[in-house]
Amino acid sequence: MTRIKSYALLAAFLITGISTYAQTADEIIAKNTAAMGGEAKLKDLKTQYVEGNMEVQGQSVPIKKWVKQNEGMRLEFNVMGSNNVQVVTRSTGWSLMPVMMQTAPQDMDSATLKIMQAQLDLRGELYDYKNKGKKIALAGKEDVNGTPAYKLKVTGENGATGDVYIDANTFLIVKTVNNINIKGQSLELVLMMSDYKKTPEGYAYAATTTQTPGDVKINVSKVDVNTPVVDTLFAKPQ
Image (cartoon, rainbow, N blue to C red):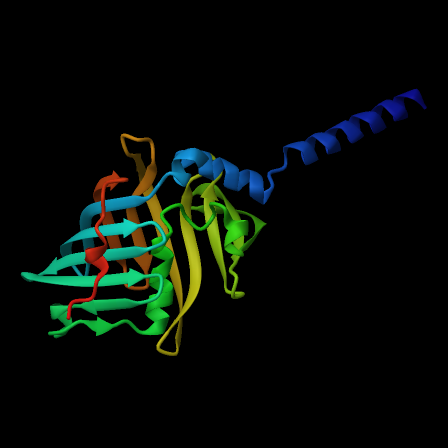
């Protein structure tokens, strides 16, 4: 009887230990926040300037991007000598793309605007997610490129869902999956993030991002944070 009680106590200890060390979604998100630079740094993130290149259909296209936290984003890319621009703000979006035979600025359609507005949040969709009206639940573990990753199910304020995969070792985001609708067509947008680097200030960023469909690859060569970004960059030309 004493031996049985000992085994029962041992089993109870093991069960307690398992529940103690099991990760919760909030614990994983907290570790992701720390890996990205820490809560204080993310909270202080106001602007970002990025340079790099976009690889698509066998071409390498130079890109530049300016973002002002929760206010505006401007993307420029040069194709065959023409400078192409996409701009998104909290309320509007427009593009001027000579590569698509545009000779004057065009208003962005609502579906594209909604998708691109996610880029206005420099701190990422996981940071302070509850105050953004989101719900996040841990949906197990899966391998991403041969490495274990936590799968988080994210539900937005409007009910839309997506998946975020966080590397179980580094706690950095390595993959996101979202279902989007463009011109009545439903698409699964998959982003793969890798080759993380840090700015001199300690902010982590993925130097390589691959998007499917489209097989678009973004290589980041330069990131500046909290440098002045003027509002005129987001103004639509008359």
